[in-house]
Amino acid sequence: MLLYKMLNRHTLTSEEEYVPDWLSAFDVIGIPKRYQPLVASNANPTGCLMELWANESIYCERPPNLAELQTVLGHIDRWDILDDISEMLQEDATQFLSRIQQPNPKEMEIITKDDTHDDIQHYDAFILYTDRDIAFVSEVIEHLETEGYLRDWRGAFDVIGIPERYQPLVASNANPTGCLMELWAKESSYCARPPNLAELQTVLGCIDRWDIVDDTSKMFPTCDDDDYLDDDDLDEEHKLLGAVQ
Image 1 (cartoon, rainbow, N blue to C red):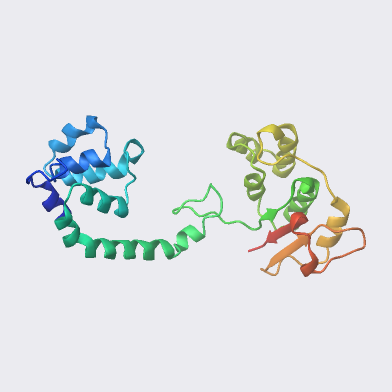
Image 2 (image 1 turned 135 degrees about the horizontal axis):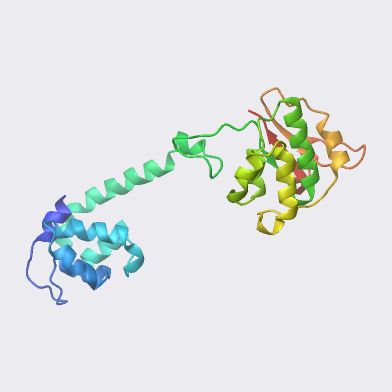
């Protein structure tokens, strides 16, 4: 890389009394002095310097980015390097922004912390709910499992936020959903969401209005007795979203 070749050379001292080579950049970046022997002994000191700056940035005085690199080069009076690499820096920045703005199909499939790029799990449904709808959620999950619409309890496990150490216990139980709900009640202080009872019967009445096996996303709102709401009138704070694949 041109930057490495030009900054590796030792040249005359600038007016600011900085030796305009990698050692000057080392000082201006603020890399801890303990790394200086490592850089000095490297066949490509500037390359080693840049790698340290990226990997050990929490210990440096300046964050590693192109704007700071330009500032560092200007501070050590290496405008010649800036003139030679400015076009390349612009191209690199443009390519980087283009990459991060393009969605990664694999990342778009990652939904929970248990998903990885190599092991994307399949979820039959996701249930999003408010704290007061816990009893309702329990009934929905049991209904879906009984009817064969929901494969298992793992989606709810993540949404509830029960600590991972309890997953083997739930998985080995003959009634995993029941075990999950019991753990939620007994170990609520360790869960991301507190247990809370809410409008179970009226919500179940709302759910009965939809067929949930046609491979489409459904809204399951809570609502008052005998007062079914249109989709446009749903209370955002108290709605249940079931996304059935």
